[in-house]
Structures are given as C-alpha cells and as structure tokens.
Amino acid sequence: MNHELVGAKLQTLLDNLVRKDKSIHNAALGVAADEMGFTWAGAAGTAMQPETPYFLASITKMYTAVAVMILQERGRLDLGDKISKYLPASLIQGIHRLKGTDYTDQLTIRHLVSHTSGLADYSLEKPRQGKPFHLSLFTEGDRSFTVDDVMRLVRDELTPYFPPSATKAHYSDTNYQLLGAIIEVVAERPLHELFDELFFRPLGMAQTYLSGYPRTAAPAEPAKIYFKEIALSIPQAMKSIGAQGGMVSTSKDGLRFLQALTRGEVFARTETFAAMQQWNKIFFPLEYGLGLMRFQMPRWMSPFMPTPELVGHSGSTGSFLYYSGERKLYIAGTVNQVERQRAPFQIMLQVAEILRKAR
Image 1 (cartoon, rainbow, N blue to C red):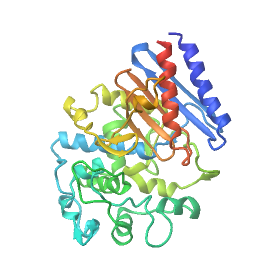
Image 2: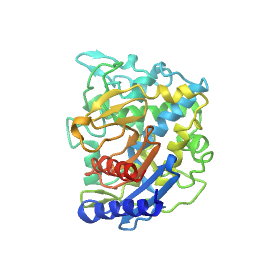
Image 3: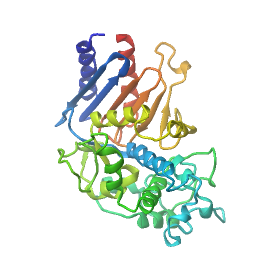
C-alpha cells in the first residue's frame, strides 16, 4: 500500500469533517493497521494538533474495567462479590429501590462493570426537581461532587430501570462511580496512582492522566470540549467523574493501550480479555460486555460497503477507541462535541473503508 496516499486520504477525511460540520470545531484521529505496517495520526480545526491531549470521557470506563479484571487476576476481588463487601452502608443503602423492593444487597461488581445493575443513571436521568445532571453542568457552570453526592441523588431523586440482571443491560454512569470507590478500597491507593502503575508508566503513555490529579509528565492542556456552540470549562466536574470518565489522553497513547490489551500485554491470562467480551444489548447497534462496547452494522443496512466488527469504547464528547480483530485495525480519536456522538462511528466506518481499499 502507498502509506503517504492513505495518510493524505485520512487527513482529507478530517479536514472535510471540520469544514462541513459547523458544530465540530476540532477533531483528532489516529490509525494503526498492523498487517500493513501502517501508523498515522492527524488533526484538524481550532488549536488541534495530532499530539494535543483530549478528554476521553467514557472511554475511561474501559481502563476502569481492565483495572478491575487485573485486581481479580491478583485475587484482590471477584466479579461475583457483593458491593456491600467493600462499600459502607451509609453510602449505598437504598440506592436500588424499585416498586417497593430494595435490591441494593443483590448488587455485585459484575453488575456494575457490565451495566446490568439496573441502577439509575445520575448523569442523564431527570430528577424529580431540576435538570438532568449533565445539562446543569453545561448550562449552569462547573462544580465538584463526590460519590456520596451521586448516591444521594440516585437514592432520593431517581428510579432504577430494573432489578439486577444477568443479561439485561442499561448504560449508567452511576455504576462506574461505585466501581471507582471499590477499586480505591481494594487497591488501597487513589485511582490515579493505580492507573499510573498499571497502564501509564509500563505502556509509556506519557500524555495520559486522570484530570485534576498530579502526573509525572507535563502534557499540554487538553482540547476544548463543546456543547453545541459553548466551549465548556468544567475542570472540577472532570476531576469528579474519575473512573467514570475523567481521563485525558491522545490518539497515540490510546492506540498503544488498545494494542497492548489485544496483544496480551496487559493481563496475566489470555482468558481474562476473552471474559470481558460477553455481550448484552444496550442500544442499537451497540452491545456491552465488561467495560467494552461492540459495534457492528447489520449487513442489510450496509449492503454495498462491508463493515467490520469494532470493539472498544466511545465517550459522550465524541471520543472513540476501537479495534477490528478481523482487519487488525485500531482507530482512536475525538470530535470534542457532545452533540455529535454518532460522528465517531461514521468516521470509523470511513477509515475502515479507506484501509480496505488500500490493501
């Protein structure tokens, strides 16, 4: 393949995206195709370079889930453990009351990691009074909050979706707020220190860190996130969402992490990564495993352009980090626009087609 030509096509894809979609002010993209020996990173738009860090948002959940799986490998916890084993009653009591029944004591770590807990989503659900939490942040200003604050909101203002389940899933940021608290209890250290030990230092991810916490390197400030035309400045909130979505990274570091994960460099046992890929439907066309999303368009929806299965995670800021095992293709990036969460999937399918034609 002509690497220079493929890189030019990928850059044109980014340039056209920012030029034609006025809601997208900047974008980044990183691509690695192992069988072709091809690696490329590009950027477009306002104050955006290939090495500019950006907020990963919910891609952070993949790192959190991998940390949970490592702790299980080391015998520090088990996915079947009740969350009440690690968290005080004062924090979790009554957070899962549904139709007169309290299911809180049935909640396990697996329910949290797989989004099968049925717990209400504190971030997106509308409370009895006021706006959904994320909208109040975007429109009323930055603020910090704790997992205790989140659980009070869930307990007092929101209703669970369903009882804890083995197969029924509903995406909820509440789950990963609780996971962050559990990980810190089990690891006996702050989450940012554990992530540095497990991922950032051993994988050479010098531009990756949890927002608001000390770090060994000094990367540039992350790119702006936009909500419609509003450039968001919410550092306190980004620090507060931690295990749920507080990570900052680059496309290069993201590709490094995902390659290490799929090549068996992160886990001690190969079956651990396979165990994360037990899928339940969340919303079409996505399925969810243990901290992983699977995306694939049905053939009838794309009869003239075969689409690969993509496994990874995406975020509410338009961030994405996925790979195709079939094509040995890794894709990372962001559009930094809360209102364009579908754009990453369109981008990734176009990237996959460019690489397919270049073979």
